Amino acid sequence: MSRPPAALPTLALLLAGAVQAARPLQTEDAPVMERGACEIEGLRAAARQGGERQRQTGLQLGCGIGWRSEIALQALRPRELVLSGKTRLATHPVRDGDAQLTLAWSLAQRHVQAGWRRSASGLVLVASAPLNGDWLMHANLGHQRDEVARLRSTTWGLAAEHNGLGEDGRWQPMAEVVGDDRGRPWAHAALRVALLPERVFVDGSAGTQLRRQSGGRRARLATLGFKLAY
Image (tube, rainbow, N blue to C red):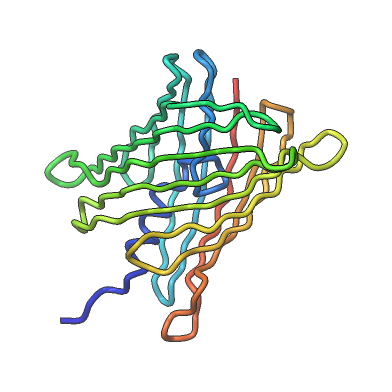
């Protein structure tokens, strides 16, 4: 029996987690929303690997709940719900701001013929720190379980996010490398634009695996999204 391509579980994890994290990055960030602050995020993602194509649409509502924590509920098509959250573990002053350490988690449920069943779960340790005043660095190390495919993966991510270009700082370029222990790593370039400072944002990203498949084609991922903060 032939073995499935190792990158396919990675595609599924990338799509399932695309509404999470610091949109449009796949890498999570450590800052946590203040109590009573909320965000609505939307996403359209498309992945391709050879002849295999996958798409994902999602909408998420997240709010700060106090106790250095936030919680979010995502609705993903088709028929999947993801409950996720973050808790800040530590904050340490550094030269250009604060370095933060946070624990993020997620639980996914998918509707099948027999009803709702758990489809995935994850736990991620997140570190964020300012770099030279203009950039913010994020590092992730986590564990993901795909309940449907019965696969466990150690995940990681490293990202750099600019604080904002232009006179009003509304253009925020960013880049990252993400991966797991089951497949080849991915590189993404992304851009977030503030239409209304600290309130309304649009974003997009494009990514590819760093090594070609045996057929000479690279797997690719593209996303478009928005965020409303209030």
